Amino acid sequence: MTYEFDWPVHDHREKEALLSVLERKKWFNGEEVIAFEKAYAEFQGAAFGVACTSGTTAIEIVLEALEIGPGDEVIVPPYTFVATATAVLRVGATPVFADVDASWCMDPAATEAAITSKTKAIMPVHFGGSMANIEALKTLAEQHNIELIEDACHAWGSQLKGQGASTIGHCGVFSFQESKNITAGEGGIIVTNDEDLAARCRSIVNCGREEGAAWYHHINLGTNARLTEFGAALLRVQLERYPEQMAVREARAATLDAGLGAIPGIIPQPSAPTMTRRSYHLYCIRFDEEQFGMDRDTFLAAVDTAGLPVVAGYPLPLYKQPLFQKFLDRHDYNACQCPVTEALCASEGLWVQQTMLLLSESHMTGIVDSIASIQAGSR
Ligand SMILES: Cc1ncc(COP(=O)(O)O)c(C=O)c1O
Image 1 (cartoon, rainbow, N blue to C red):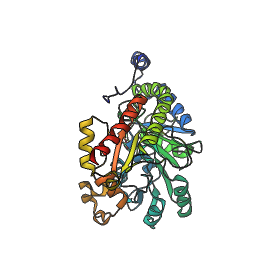
Image 2 (cartoon, rainbow, N blue to C red):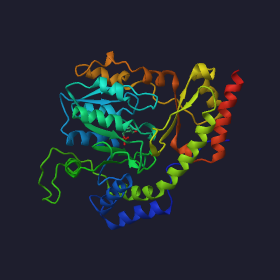
Image 3 (cartoon, helix red, strand yellow):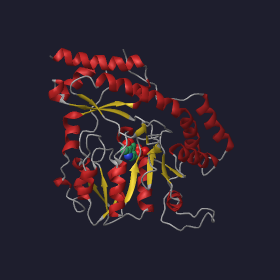
Image 4 (cartoon, rainbow, N blue to C red):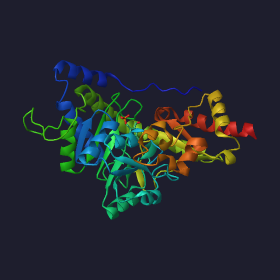
């Protein structure tokens, strides 16, 4: 069996949407962006969406809009894409790492322990699309009067008790880069219920302009992070096809949960108990070498021989990436110790990418059977 999926998905609808922008000759700052922002905010169950060029810029812009900068600390997990932390560095603030727990998302107890008088925000990542313990983090944020920003770059449509990711904290951010479940190659959006915050973000995205005011009138230190009309047109179609794909991924993940969960040493990432929908950007597995009876490198070599779509994921906790050595004046990153993340990186983490969850049910049982036979062969 081969595991390949032709991604990104597109058909005549994307083609027509792109051609229509081309021929309308309004390639920026037009109706497609406005319509996409509205549709996406509605999809998450929020009042406002502010589109921009990427998930990375979305985080930077939110931090700037919340006036987080030099001298301020933002608590982030070390098991995430580098942008969650570097966006904090780029606005002049300091990312402080709090370990993840068995959910693969930020641990509320570790987060509480990391709070200092300089903490201005907590930024959990809904890793792989499973939501962090956002209710506990929200309580913590309220108790300490700090911001809760959701890095929802993997969590399009994920819900907790029917509430969309990005609507429980003050705001959330999403990515539409090409590996993502909804994509225009690049793109991002900030989602919030706070009208003033949305207006500040919109201004920063658009060179500090004031909505409705003259074009050369600037009230904020902004940048140009505007999404193009082409990107927005593509994303409108991608959003229309998303609910169907999301349901397929959820069904395929249920098959993997049932099959893989029965194999000793293969522990699927649990969904937060009150989650009602889950996006599955990644299907994550914790690999217990002792229980499985093999070390992860040997397992990955066997997986490779069998042609299975399973990879190791992040090689290092973020604080061990060389770039943090340049910021030791802000924080002692050499002293960071996050044992759950270190174990995920060193020997326990495994990922199956979202595109694989769009393959057939028999591909899922193929993955389960092959992993079971790798284990049987080793015993
Ligand atoms: C958790 C997380 N946050 C932020 C980003 C940044 O998004 P982008 O690649 O659109 O800049 C990513 C991208 O992979 C991500 O996985």
